[in-house]
Length: 154
Image (cartoon, rainbow, N blue to C red; front, side, top):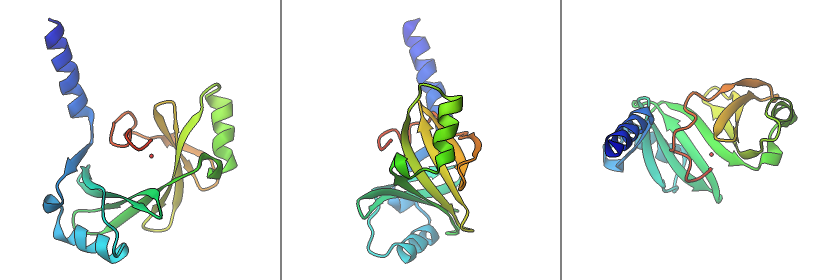
């Protein structure tokens, strides 16, 4: 019985995870070409596929970075890990007011293809998204997956 429960829990977790590691050989050529054009000379630490998009993870100037592309090579966004101290003031204000006693573990600056800036703050085990001014937007719907837990991890 315990084995069945454990197997069901593992199966549910696997189904829940959105991101999947993929071999570079399985990444569309258009995506790899766009990555090389945007980041010449940079070697990826790995590729993931999430919701039909491809994400390259790498270090740029020793900073954890990832870039997301559509399968046709269209650039979507870049995520750069930043020190928590670089988050807009509103993020800390939100955490203090709404999540008393919880600490911001990690911070990420997200730049979309159109230049829009957002910030992600990992608080507890949940990712919270904020606009450039530090105003709360939403809890990240992908929170709880483990894709970034090794670097947060993000």
